[in-house]
Image 1 (cartoon, rainbow, N blue to C red):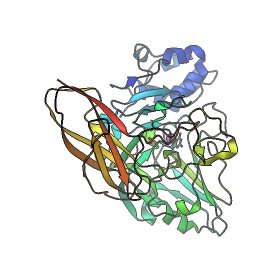
Image 2: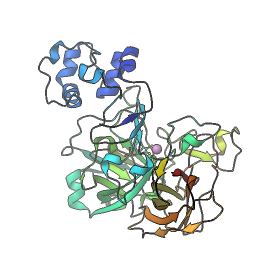
Image 3: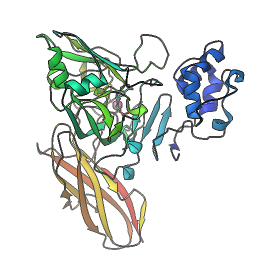
Image 4: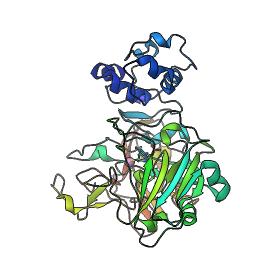
Length: 436
Ligand SMILES: Nc1nc2c(c(=O)[nH]1)N[C@H]1C(S)=C(S)[C@@H](COP(=O)(O)O)O[C@H]1N2
Ligand SMILES: [Mo]
């Protein structure tokens, strides 16, 4: 495990505060008063799995809130199996982003796909018995297993960008509260699944349908039954876009537990929050969905430009839909010390529901630009690779900047379009390079 820890609240602090809550966070369920009862079930299995064994022979003797010594020395709050090199922003819930230089692939490996959790993920999911229900404003409500989905609908595989609406929030000044993502709450994994539109057509969406409502198996942080961590949706027109997937595989394998195993939505071009993980139910509604994190100011921006720090009345906020044009320099890593003057710059560029037509690179703080070589978009919703050869004239400090332009002629701004909740920062990516 080489997951870096940004936040100091670790396991100890967590258990000192409240062992029962800590159990919930770590093991996904609250300990009974009789801890042994808890440890006998799924809790025991998940604790054992965290400790890297299949069983804890003397588990009956473990007191409630005991931090296993194997974990007690660990300075990182969690080791996330199957994830490498991510920066942990928060351990309750688990949120981790990927340093830009680890995103230097057309298809992001699962180990490098960021994690954004709003609540407590389910433990011990069983793909064989998992069920998805489609109900609400449909002719024929459906309950489907993953096998049903595979048997009844065409299965497709495609790389798709998932980006958190709050990616880039850390650069806001004045700061915006929420996860302080820098650049790495974005990834482009290859997802396999069936088309959401095909499944909705099979259920027969009735006239009057306005919005989808997505429901899932993760739990609210409070542990309260019936309270959802997040339940978002999209307008029915967007839901019927053939590019949305109900996905059961990620990079050719079952989905990583933290990325929504065994079933999730993949909604290209819109904020990651639309792509419900651990998906159990899609309810078709006759109004804009008002589930958890759909209302108030969550995943919303002011409908008019605002000055940094300006107070915005609630009624002026609108739901974020398409994500903006953006790019990321994935080589070199920022802070690189170069011993030669020539350098290959590489990265990824994307724009929600659009193609990238140009990426430009500057090494002189934007005074001059060179056009990068730009790769094709493999399919709707995927990012495009770019590369450029640059030569630094002499030794010293440089910044490499990248600026993408999409097929509607929209480019990335230099500055941040500040908004109260810190969404949609698509300002140009800059990396520092020292040439010796
Ligand atoms: N059930 C569920 N789905 C969810 C979330 C969540 O907390 N619970 N987070 C959403 C948000 S805000 C984002 S950005 C993406 C992140 O997907 P990832 O964790 O696979 O990177 O998942 C979305 N789907
Ligand atoms: Mo997100």
